[in-house]
Amino acid sequence: MTSDESNRSEDFGLVRAARGGDEDAFGELVRKYQGKIYSLAYSMVGNHSDADDLAQEIFLKSYRNIGKFRFQSSFYTWLYRIGVNTIITRRKKLRRNRHLELRPGALDVEGSPYLSPRRGGKRGDEAAAGRELRRDIREAIDRLPEKQKTVVVMHDIEGIPHSEIARILKTSEGTIRSRLHYGRKKLQDDLAKWLD
Amino acid sequence: MRKINSEETARNDSRGTDRLVKLLELLRAARAPEPSPGYLAAFWPRLRQKLPSRRRAIIQPLRYGGLAAAAAALILWVTLAGTERAGRTGPASPVYALATASSPAAGERPETNYVSGTPRGKENDRRAGTDYVLPRISARENGRLEV
Image 1 (cartoon, rainbow over the protein chains, first blue to last red):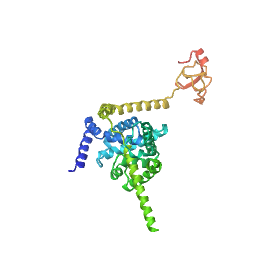
Image 2 (cartoon, each protein chain N blue to C red):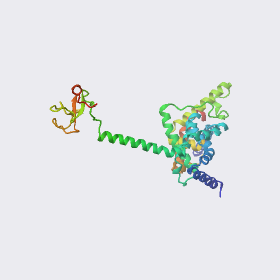
Image 3 (cartoon, rainbow over the protein chains, first blue to last red):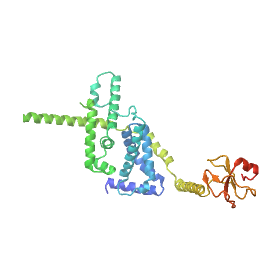
Image 4 (tube, helix red, strand yellow):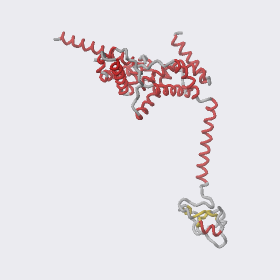
């Protein structure tokens, strides 16, 4: 049995126990995936407060719907699907209410060599350049159409493989690659001043 | 000429690859900062408090069922029995009050038999249990009003 298979069957066991009312079993699943779900939410919304709120909501939804899990995909795929749908719905609400925030220090790009256009000045200038870069990245990601943004975040930021994203979003790998291509192209145009 | 073109294409390709590599590096830097161990440790206990308990999962549907049944009974009562009762004034004619036909004194007839503008029964119908609308003041004066 490979580690993937053993992981999957371990998750299935925990899901069965959770369906039987064992909260501790569900807690195991939460502990196992909370970091990944939080990270996905953070990459999509860009601030800790909303990401934390979303992560809690995603697990709550999965608990309420755990009876609907059919054991046809991995628990991880199913959980991510709930996650992506929840985040997209919330982002639509957020977009209506306010512009997305960027928590100071959220994006650790201080060590990036691409600060070069602004480097060479005082420390204050560097910090300002870092802030500007973070803001530009965040805004560029945020301007992407929802489908492209989801794929760019999942693949280029979270490092999820194409095949897994295709399973999560219930679409083909070709579609995922195409969305990624167009998303990256838009980002390159939007972030041109940091790339050239 | 062809050589120049191919060199230019190669240069463009290399520039495109370079830009993509730079972009990917920037995006990777946009990853969420690692949550603190304290945050991760508190995540599940906070979530656990929000989980619907099994007791609540059983009681909640019953509670909603009870509310739904009460609402249905209220709607049914309003539809069938209505709110027309002896002594009540109608919203359309607040100066009139309902009295039953068995109450009027012998020889007297109700002045009108309209309830909220809707004709109800015949003017001289005095069967027991038939509702009539009497002017509130005269009904009180006659002592016939059942309030």
